[in-house]
Length: 422
Image (cartoon, rainbow, N blue to C red; front, side, top):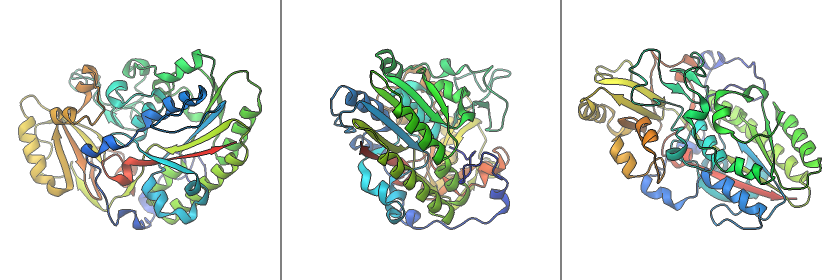
């Protein structure tokens, strides 16, 4: 997620600091960036497998994909930006997280918050739920018809994260039509509670991703998360209980200062203490499951799509984010654009046509016709530590961010699953 809440939990933190302050150099996470090519993806379960595993745990079954033990209640804590590569590189700062690691899964493609949370909460991959990235074209005519633009799914805005609200243009429940598993669980009597910052309540993205009715408890920082989860678990209930909690600040620290920076490491320590406190507060027959929505890499090379000669020739629109770009081309221009982008980017990115993307199942085994139309005519996946910027188009804070995610690298794709039992 692009940062909105700072490392100290302050919603009003100074976002301008990114543009004026110094960036701390990342540690070992960028020393070897291992590409996790699509042919390797089937070796891993994904975030879409987590909720089905929790549902199995409620019935006493053990999922082979994500082995959640039999439980009466489950707390699922999502730490935005908690990647397994970064956790392994800083294990000494996070002894609790390290000791509770159960398995490693893949976020899914692209490794970005909007797609990952929707997959997590629906139990479906992007090819089914349709939230294929940070931003995308909703259909073939979306960038051609008057008053219809790209959708930034995370902010639910038009074109840019700071653009106009998209609620009147794109109804969340229509863009993401998969109600998913959680409403089914609630219909069977599972009590659902959400513990999240209050600003997310009722947002366009929340409407798209969180389809089950439930109790909403606002929590802005670790102390409030701990208090709200404890209070929820202490309330008697006759059936099973599912608590979803979310904290965004590790991701924010990585974007602003770099993954592995002093600020990021400090925030990881806060996460470790939160998980330790939650684990010690679990009642009997309660399981805590902790995971991340993506990892992160440090940007060390910037390729500016807006200022490179003829880079946008034949291009109708560019969506996505700086590690994964959806490229929508003008009629008849795709092959020429692919050749130009491939030559211009060289070893800095894979530039792949939609047909190959579908054949290699980047967005899942099943991709609906509606979702296939949202995928770019070309998809450009940055390699190494390169990011594909748009200095004249994207908000300045995003262009200048230190940490990024979305692409194929193990540092971005792999996330840990941690478990503790009461």
